[in-house]
Length: 255
Image 1 (tube, rainbow, N blue to C red):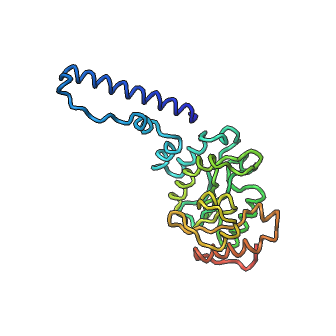
Image 2 (tube, one colour):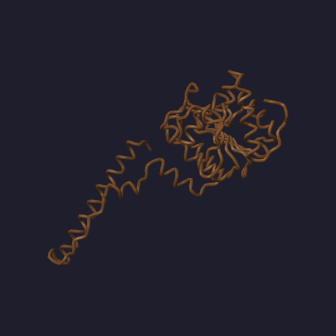
Image 3 (spheres, rainbow, N blue to C red):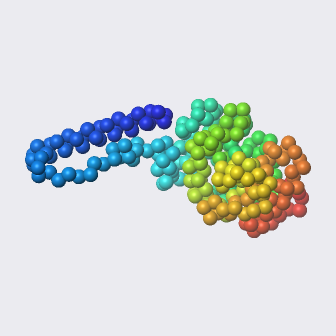
């Protein structure tokens, strides 16, 4: 249902509610007599209609409140809340383990992820796996990997604000269910969206942020490092911060 359809349905519902109220009011006056009927405050019919027909974000939040991880994935697979749902090949909910030591949050799927339905499986994903291995983590044993948006933006452009807002409830529910010891945002888009910040990435790197009480660190996206290998030293510093934060041993080889 589009926003326009939802608004039209709300207007219709408000109209019906008001007409029904007026009808009962007239019946009550007829039965009891106009002079004896106690006047009551008229409800806000527009607000009642909104309560009956919530907007798409609230509707998703209601569905997610009791969803399991697998149910979140099912909701993502059928989601059409923003235009990305009509251009994807596959939605990419996320993967990994529950009760993860670390949760990786990226920006969104790329071409290979869009084809496979799995997060971080392209060249950048292989590189990310090497980062995790350096601090004794992996998506198979103690990490969960997800993205801000679950569908690939056309031509790998940055997700639009409305696309981010449409998708964030899924990620927030995943975080609540996975209960990671820490979160690592890779890339500026992921950090800005999750932390609701607009600082430069380099300014966010050295600080332990918080999301719903969970410590959050920020580093560069693996794809950005592959384009500029001079960023490797900075990423290695960030990975060591992650390892120290969650008390994981670190290999001596820099990634």
